[in-house]
Length: 134
Length: 134
Image (cartoon, rainbow over all chains, first blue to last red; front, side):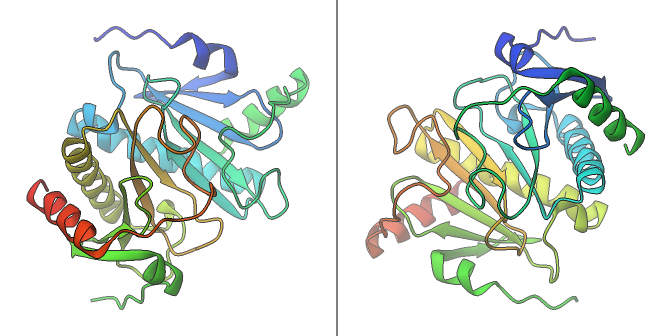
C-alpha cells in the first residue's frame, strides 16, 4: 500500500467527511458555497495524468458519485468540477454546488473573497446528508 | 448515432482542432493562455454525471490525453482542468496550461479580463503541435 500524507493546507482548509476508496472526501470550510474536495490518497501526484489508468477511472467514478450526491442534497443549478492546483500542488478535485446569485455567480469560486467558516453543527449535518446520498 | 449540435457560444469562442473520439477538441480563441476545450458530442448533456459510464471513462481518457499533450507542448508548470458550465450549459471541459506570472496567476482563468484573439498563423501552428502530440 503506497503511503499518503495530506497537504497541510488541504488539511487546514477542509473538514474530513470520509475515505471513499481512492479518495479522501472533505468539506471546504467555507459556507458561501456547498463545496467538497476529493483527494486521491497517493503521494507525489499533482496532475490527473500522474495517476495510473485504474486510479484515473476510480477518480472519475468517485467524482461523479460525489457530484451526484451534492446536486441531490443541494438541488444545485450547476455543479462545478475543477482540478487547478496552482497553489496547492497535491492533486485535489473541487466539486462545488452553484446557483444563480451565489457569491461571484456565474464566475468561479476560486480566489474570490474570504472564506466564511461553517458553524460546527451545520457542517456535521451537511456532511451526514452527503454521506447518506453517496 | 445520437445527434449533436455544438452550442453557438462554444462555436464562436473557439477554433476547431479535431474530433478525437467522444469529444470535439477546440482551441479557445484567447492567446493569454494555451487553452483547449473538449466537448463530448452528445446532445442534452450538461453535467459529467449525465454521460453514460462508458462516455465518462472516454471523457477522462481524452481529457488526460489532451492534458498530457498540452503540458508537453507548452512545458506548463500546472495544467488546470475544469467543467463549470455556469454560462454555457452544454458540457465542456477546459484544459489550460498555466505558469507563474501568467494573467491572473495563481487565480483561475475563467471570468478574468478580456480575450485576446490568436493571430491565425499562430493558432494553426499551435493546433498542429497539439495534434502531433496526441
